[in-house]
Image (tube, rainbow, N blue to C red):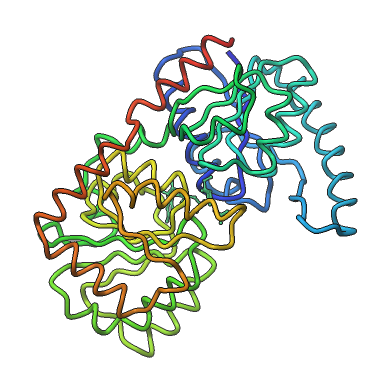
Length: 362
Ligand SMILES: CC(=O)N[C@H]1[C@@H](OP(=O)(O)OP(=O)(O)OC[C@H]2O[C@@H](n3ccc(=O)[nH]c3=O)[C@H](O)[C@@H]2O)O[C@H](CO)[C@@H](O)[C@@H]1O
């Protein structure tokens, strides 16, 4: 079987695609993959690291306001469709799966027009523009929240969950901790601002760094690749506390999550699928800069059930953040309850469900 997967821009679209590829590799012996992304997206560095053949097309997203750039985007879309058709024919794709991000637009559209079976995977409770557009042309739409079903044609939509929820299970947390230089016998708080990092979270952490240095827990603080140098410069002035490990990006997140007690994070849908599958309590600071404020809706799906504490970015201060962390991690009973509530929301067999959907279709 020859399978094309496309999804890009940020980790939240790429990691579900990779998790699905790994699930298919477990189930199918004779299978070949081609990943289509863009050079600018994180996929151009993440996917080749995983030894998956990667090709790129050139595409940008639409501006929501009327702008001259949008005319250029339409032209690029049409060019992207032509390039994708050529790649799909050359590769002789049997099925094409899109996991979101602008790049999926031309790739999945081209596949549908060529009559190749197509599936799109929507991670969020409120879909983005690309998936809404593509849902008219594809054969199946896989979603992760019941709330997302209403945006898609009834006869095509199936609740599968996020395959990354399956991939993070069964990993060795001790190895995860050791791989990033952490202790194995002290509670771990992971702080991460999504796959690209988040400046407001970085600012709050830098202000509280000295105080965090006196805490009885250790911290893995992931800045995001583009913010790392700037954060490091600040940290050199303040001093880097011994219990705070700072990294630009973590490539073995499933192992690290397995060793994590509490997470402070943005509320991207893939991160939430991981946290609920593993039952990790969290403090969520949704990005207010995303389409339809979907990260806040994602976060509320957890906080309404006691699986997370929601802190809006406009209310974020370093004092509040430290109080929140202490309040949860120092209270064993609260930790147990939050873990249980998080786990209840997880869909651990999501990869299998998505694989089954693909198999039925092909
Ligand atoms: C700004 C923006 O548009 N964000 C969107 C993007 O977020 P973003 O890409 O930040 O997505 P998520 O938080 O959902 O997922 C991040 C993924 O990257 C991984 N990771 C992260 C940091 C790191 O150092 N190492 C690592 O491996 C995480 O484990 C996770 O698998 O896609 C999500 C899923 O569609 C959306 O819900 C978000 O709203």
